[in-house]
Each structure stands twice: as C-alpha cells, then as structure tokens.
Figure 1 (spheres, rainbow, N blue to C red):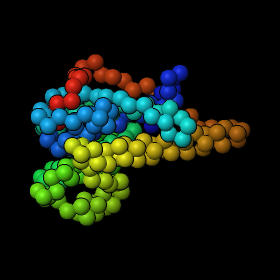
Figure 2: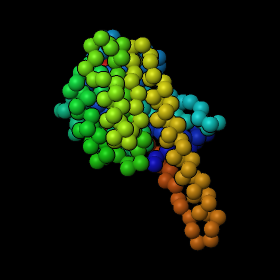
Figure 3: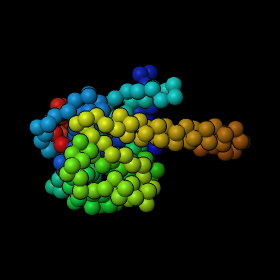
Length: 217
C-alpha cells in the first residue's frame, strides 16, 4: 500500500480509472472532483489526474485520481501508471455490450500491474441512457460478485452514485490501512517482532501527460 503523510493531509491515496475509451471515465473524474460534466467530450490522450480532499473517520484523506486513455495504442503508456495505486474504478458503458465484455481483460491487466491488495469497484456508467441499455444491472452485479468486486451503476451526466462510488473505495482503502496500522502496533508491542508499514510517496511520472479541463473521455 502506498500513501504518505504531511501537514496538509493524513493520507494520500492514488486511485486509477480504467475501462474502454468512451465509457465516461473522464466525466466521472470531472463530476467527482469539480462537479462538471462535458457533453462534447473527446478521448483522453495519455494520462491526466485530479485530486479531492475529504474527511474519513476524522482523518484528512487526499484522493489523487488518475484517468487513463482507454485506446489500445496508449496501453504502453498506461501500464506504468498502475504503480502505487491502492484503488481502482473499472468502468463500462451499460449501453455498449463490448465495453462490458472487456471488463475481464481490464481486470487481468490491473491484477498483473497493481498491488494484490488493491481495492476495486466496477461501475456500469450512463444510467441516464437506460432506454438504450445493453447490459442488465443484475449481470453486472453478478460479474462483480464472482470477481470479488464492489459494484454500482452510475451516471456522470446526472451525478448519480459518482460520489458514492469514490467514497466506498476510499473507505475500503482507509479500513485496510487502519487494520495494518493496528496490526503493526500490536506486533511492535511484542519483543523481537514488528511489521513495517510501507509509506511511499506517489511518484508523478514526468513522462505522463497531465492535462487540465473536463472535455475528454
């Protein structure tokens, strides 16, 4: 687990957004961090990120949320950015069956490159287009349960469940960190034993393209 502590916040958690191009990852990011939505969206090129600070059980948590391009040609860029992530939101479009079918491929990539303890939530986005639905909610829920993931359906356009999705991920991460801290304290009380908790600063790769603005997917 990677997080760091300074005078401005108690924890910094890196969360990655993954999923096919066009599923609404960037609008989920902008809705959560800036409460903005861009109807005329363009595909993300490379990587961008935004941050949001919130309180979790009396602690100040800074969420650093990374949005990666979903197109295959950027996969070489995005594989490195999983490093240090403690949470992931895997997004598909409920109106596009193929984006749901590709969930398993994204899960494999995530598990190949990320920490084994990473907290993952699956989100079926664009519930505002329910009349065009191609993936039943129960089917998404079933896959999530089989893979051991949390699950929500969201709408970045209508701001439905976006806040809840990130709050759930952040709370799960915080609870894992808290349990590790308590376990380390208990171990440290026993002579000759101890567990070091890794406190690592998230490294903002200078080669990654950080962009401002909300008009990308």
